[in-house]
Length: 187
Image (cartoon, one colour):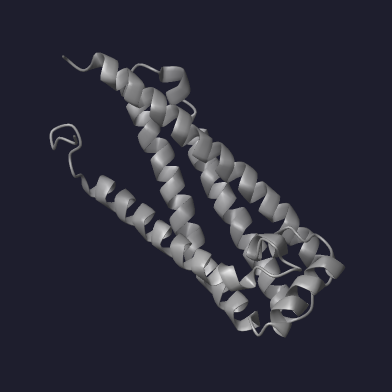
């Protein structure tokens, strides 16, 4: 059970919680918007478009959305992504720093030292995501032509890698901090 003296409601903590909750809410909305974009040409919806990597493949995806009358939904989803990206990047960076503080307090100084570089990775993942979203938007506004599908793919891969490392740190580091805190707690 959470106790007020162990988890004081600081302004920084409230801001981080609000950022993470807003990112999760937008993620849920984006997931709902993405369902109709999952077509035969884009089995994973927007993710298929992000990773298309070629004019032909991106063109097939866009054509499937036009044929299904979903191109406006795809454009709206990309617009929402511009709001989601900074919330997710800042939330992930803040959570990495919070886990680092908990690890440091629990005596795991080496693992805690990774918090700042991984927070910076989360921010770099956000920059990659914004670049990717811009490349995708250009393809929706005009036509999928080089270099935009290739840029979108490279940025998507970078985004997934950078964010994946941060999320792994949250799971592993957070788990270690919880276990160590549990061992240190008086019985």
